[in-house]
Length: 445
Ligand code: GLU
Image 1 (tube, rainbow, N blue to C red):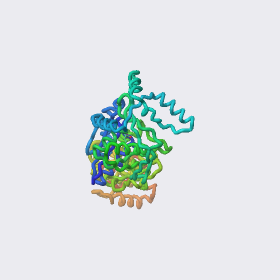
Image 2 (cartoon, rainbow, N blue to C red; image 1 turned 180 degrees about the horizontal axis):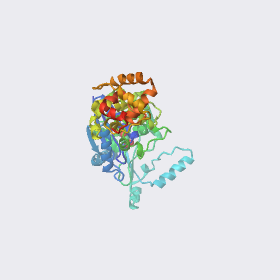
Image 3 (cartoon, helix red, strand yellow; image 1 turned 60 degrees about the horizontal axis):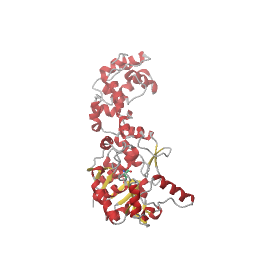
Image 4 (cartoon, rainbow, N blue to C red; image 1 turned 90 degrees about the vertical axis):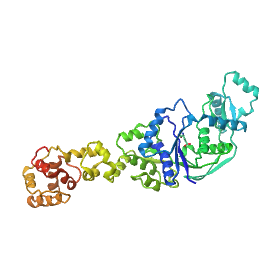
């Protein structure tokens, strides 16, 4: 059976490299197994979810190269959640509670003072109809809890292997708040069942939810999917990545000129047994990434790694893959220019720094005019190609006796006006005889 996976962000912020991790692990899994990838907006929190964030997430996913097969919004599916709750109520698995947050807090403190675990004591189960009516008359609205079975739930985690949680140690989870809003737990389960999700791949911060959700799935008569909980991405200091971490937001990285596959490679290879390296294509990454090769420890990364990966990725990028973007930057020179300068690009926009070096105008830097005049006098005849540089510099060396840096640096400074840059062997034919002659004379060209 082909897998059905889902990425279920709450549209209450933009994507960053941390919450991109589950998106990618699901996408790569779907790619590898020819499955279906669902993008589901967990937007039941109507106060905090916005369409703007949902659109932003879609933009970020498209940029990184994730193209969902189906898109759903939970806010359009309340009827399904209502029906599921009716069933649970009828079966005695969903019960009304009237405690205020303050009352619950005091109760927890008393339990802790007596050395007991702060688990909800199910007092609401003992309420009579008259007591409930009295609360309602007081203006209290119920919140609703799922009645957990006091059993150990087991599953074979796709990342962590055999896993279990003793639900007797958990409070009955609140599924519906007193204002009637659904918390994340139930809609997620209802949708996973209804959408035929076969594999739930998400962060290990959801491990406890999984035990609860497996019980809810069973109570609803659904088929329990496989679960995989990946380690979470942290910065170098071990801090988790919060949603509002601007500079690591996908939009921020895109604006900073970081390539999507550099971000994607880092987001999934860090914290795995694979070396972190830039993988140029999603399909290739899908072959490499394996859930059971993720580490159990947090996936720590240095922000500077991204820049490094970006440079490495560009150094190996074919001209065809960047040609339209170079054209949009008014950088010409075709493939030969790109191949000459890509090794000097940390970001694609760096190509624009080198374009004037080839296309003019360069202000030559000449300290020793006798040397550059001599060099000019032994320039090989056109047409020039990549062998020209070697022929020319040998002639200059023979004529002047200069070698090493004393030979190359004055030529580089005269031809480019800069001390560092792409290999002159590749640049020289692009600069061409006419400009070369002018620059060697010290003219701006
Ligand atoms: N909206 C939840 C989150 O962003 C989804 C978790 C899940 O994948 O079930 O954490």
